[in-house]
Image (cartoon, rainbow over all chains, first blue to last red; front, side):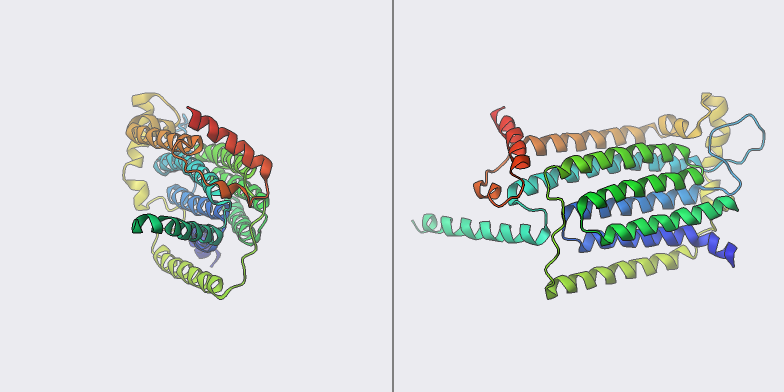
Length: 134
Length: 210
């Protein structure tokens, strides 16, 4: 029973973490918290790949002189190395966007930004109308 | 067996931190906890034999991203606004949880068909990985197979990654230099951090002057 649970435990936790990340991205109105949710989601995908590459009884894929050593799969490790670096790049871009949004709308809460946007659009309409008529 | 126990325990810790992040509204605490989350996942990577991934995650995920978040926080309000308890907000949360639970249930269904954890005969272990492990030592004389695959067998992947990072860096520079900025004089009025805003404003003015 315990062995059966251990066989799928990593997958279950990865799915749980992915759900938490997705929920944060969809439901949280704060943009910084959305970005943290995105990185939780990302890390769950990393864990999934590394879990797939694991070989029980194996060791890290660094070659040793001992014959018949069992190594874990190096390919998922390489893919995830790339993904981690790209993940930080997207985080930096997201933060830059948040800073600009804060500068333009004075808030990082989704509902307040939408309200400010509607307000300024209405103001623009009111300003533009006399021009159109003339 | 011990390694499996450690793995299960650390994964539970990870879920605990994620739930704490979900429930906290102080943003600095959220960011520090996400740094701890990255560090815990790095420990899990060591336990799963992915040492290269572990130190990249510890340095880049727990280090650089936390620093970036904290640097950005000096311009942002430190606390999440407690959402107004309106009906639309609740129904939105309900929709979000339904979507998450549905996606999770489908994934659990799919996960039951995956090969068991650590199975040496799983399809993923039988394709190109044996060739990398057998060839790379004699052909390229680099003991670390991850390095060999990253720089040689999949060198173009790494080139693509560099291009992505360069593009992101360019994007950040363009966004923060504010060359295309439209001025909104009223935006600066209703803010609680006059000092931080004036610093951003100073940066932008220089960008415009160029």
